[in-house]
Amino acid sequence: KKLEAFLLNLFCVYGNFELSNIRKRTENEEIDIELKNKDNDSFWEQLNSPFIFIEAKNWSSKGGSPDVKIFENKISSHSNLCRLGFMISVNDYTDGCETENIRIVADNCILVLISGKDINKFFDEEVSVKQFLEHMISLAIR
Image 1 (tube, rainbow, N blue to C red):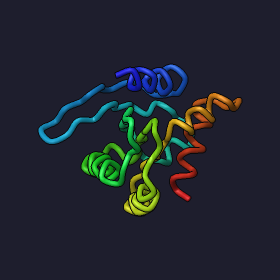
Image 2: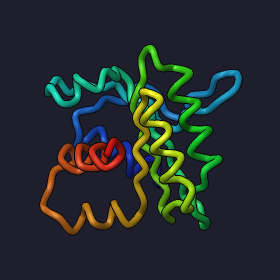
Image 3: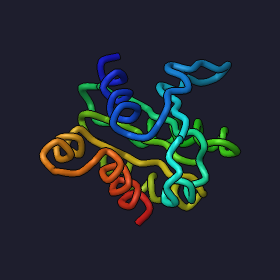
């Protein structure tokens, strides 16, 4: 819950996003954070994602490929309104996640993997939240 609160601050206070739901439950899934994309910058508009999903993993272990696949399924099952998701795993990811992520981008949705190291690097740099997120998206779609 602390990680979710931090991410809400990061995305909603310092980014141009609005909270839609937190811990949204449906019959078969839970979405940690659902944001409305309120940014009318051409970069964000071209992503064609009125909603953005965020998955927060504050685990002692690394996030794995099964976790990435489950999150991708959440995004793709809502693809009419959501094509972009950020998964934040404070303890990094296992090696197979990068391969899984490449396949996901090819399937017409963008899943951005952010680690605790990425967030620490963000704090050390003089960039805005928007610049940080755009950079992380560019890494995901390479």
